Each structure stands twice: as structure tokens, then as C-alpha cells.
View (tube, rainbow, N blue to C red):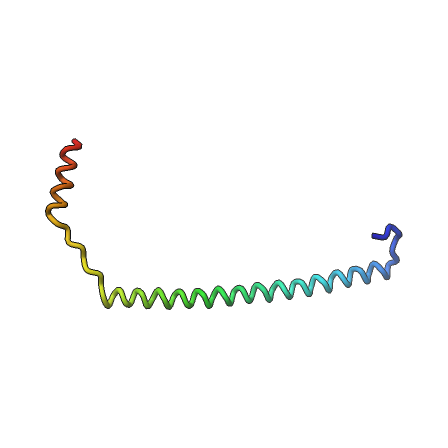
Length: 84
């Protein structure tokens, strides 16, 4: 950079240029944030629809309950008795 002092007019021009650059960058950043927000909302909506469809399917066709056999239950009781 130049080490020579700048005139007030040059300093004003530098400040204005910096301010305009910051405004443009701010607008770009806000647009990126808005686009990311829209993408998140779309993804959330899709996932919610999939979850609701899965839950409706589960309610319509509940899974079969697993039947415990008496042999397994007796084996567990016998194991617990051996441990004590």
C-alpha cells in the first residue's frame, strides 16, 4: 500500500467504495441464507410426509406380536436360579 497520506476526498471515496462492497456482500449473504432456508423447509416437508405415510401404514397394518414360548421363559428362570 501507499505510505503517502491521502487527501480527504480520496479517503471519502475509499470509505464509500468499502461501504458499497459491504452492502453487496450483505445482500449476497442474505440471499444464500434465504436459499438454504427454503431448501431446509422443502426437505423437512418431504421427510414429514414420508413419516406420516409410514405411521399411517403402521396403524393400518400393525405388526404381529411376538409370542414368547414357554421353553424360553423357563430357560431364563432356570438361568437366573443358577446364578443365585
